[in-house]
Each structure stands twice: as structure tokens, then as C-alpha cells.
Image: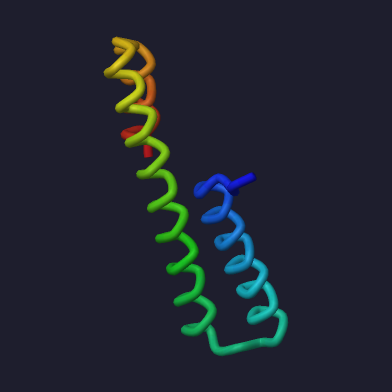
Length: 78
């Protein structure tokens, strides 16, 4: 059974987070830890964009405009 690509990406981020925790515990230089935090954040943002793009496409195909509006409200809340 093929693995869901989103799950694969999320597991990769989980590995990044575990690496960040180890770096922090090992008292690695702050700049190195922060770089990894930024990389993990960027990965999560990329996954979120992919999920939202897929959902927006599904909403528009099914004419679920209310769902799409709610998604957009959630995005712009941040």
C-alpha cells in the first residue's frame, strides 16, 4: 500500500523536530538551532499550502463556497 505523500512529508518534519530537540539538548550554537527551526517551519508551511490548495480545488469543484470561505478566513486570521 503506497504511503500518503502528506504523511511522508509530516514524518520528515517530525524527524526535523526531533533533530532540533537533540541539537538544543546538546547545546549546539543558537544560530544552528534557529536555522533548523526555520527549515521545519518552512516545511510545515509548504505542507499547509499543499493541503489548502487541494482543499480549495475540491471546494470549487463541488461548489462548497462556504467551506472555501471558512478556509480563507482561517488563513488570514494569522
